[in-house]
Length: 176
Image (cartoon, rainbow, N blue to C red; front, side, top):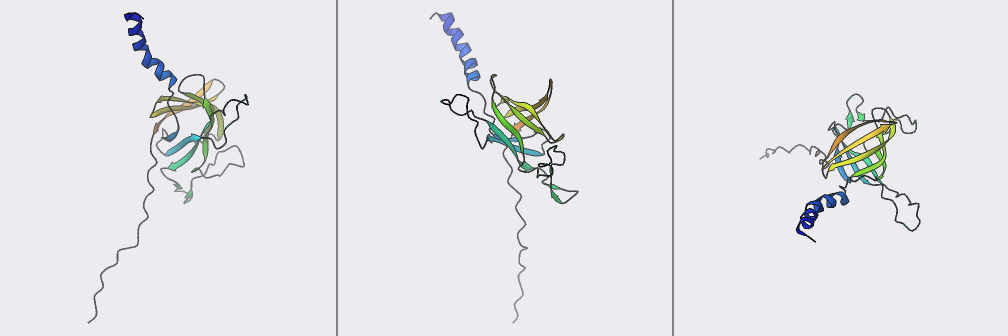
């Protein structure tokens, strides 16, 4: 190996390493509106591979695990999905609801293909996740050639507010 080929290999090595090591979208993500956090994790049931000897294809799903305002001020009850086109799912609580479905590694590095739910339209679309870094992703849904998406950032789920404890007891005067 000549000095030039060694230098070229050293320059290209980090580039090839970054292509091979895809960023992992599992974890908790703050959505663009900063009003919800979605946990992306392995789907409860892994899809079987077409090749019976191959391991199952890893698929990811995502559920809402935190809402900035879990209670709808208009009703005093938990927020519900009022626009879902599926009558069986219309009215389900938003907290715990699935919005990312069957994401599997795409041919492109740092990209996952599957389906996403739009709570604004009540519909599921073909979509993908594109990892911009370990702490930033772009998620989008597509209809035909038109895609719309948003940037999510990695965020831990905040601790729930602590309930107010009983009022402190006032010292009582002793009778003599």
